[in-house]
Image (cartoon, rainbow, N blue to C red; front, side):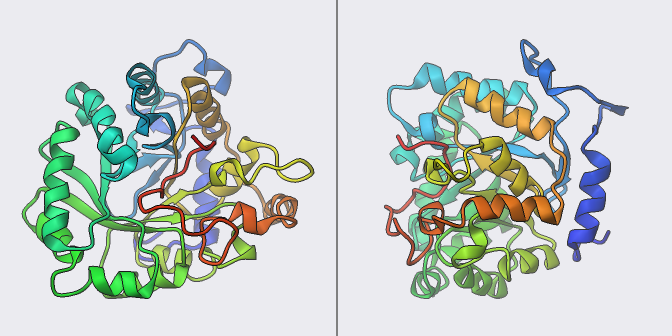
Length: 340
């Protein structure tokens, strides 16, 4: 399997062979999800390459929203972040915009002692070079680190937005310069509104990663998996999926009701990892259990899951342009299982 070409057939071969266990410390692990209980060691979540970054990322990763972006949740956030790392999560994603910086502060408190255990990603929502460099300085201070593994252009929504960020004083120059200076190791782009905008972004710059929306309702409205996902894989990018539960809106009586099923559908796509923000440790452990137990769905199984959301695709894709709840505030990009 080459770095630049990663077909669905190659993906199914890799995941099909790797879901029973992965090599950790030179020894094959094959433990059940039930061993998550009371076990602080890393569970055998499958690993996949994060594109060409050289980092092998676990199937489930931690997003920096939900509890982690709420003021006054110091103890709860600390417990979620530490438990995630204890259970093998090795990718943590946050943003300067989440909780107006609160998310980065909470993540930083854990990074002060556990920085080398994770691939650390954050984002700039500022559209200018100088403004983005200002946010980068704040991010490094809040995250208590002198380096980022990934710095991302946050929530690109429209062609006009993309043009602004690629303008003479646009934020793309900050990303490029920060990478050249070694402050950040990799750079990425994120978005959930319009896949065509992100396709254009990938044509304009050689990003290392992309954070995109992907859940079982994707095909019904502005699908990300038709053109954007294949292009990202063709370019050998790390692909991180978000919006799996669509802030809880994907779950409806008479439709899809299982987070495990939603996650398994997404794990079965040609992606590197998913990020989800969690409300509490129990929710985190349930999600990691789904990753530990993951077996790829076949096409018929995936179609059956998609059919469950066919009656309310606008709700399950509310974050896309023209969908039910579009025009959420800037920065509300990562996923969490419930509102609030």
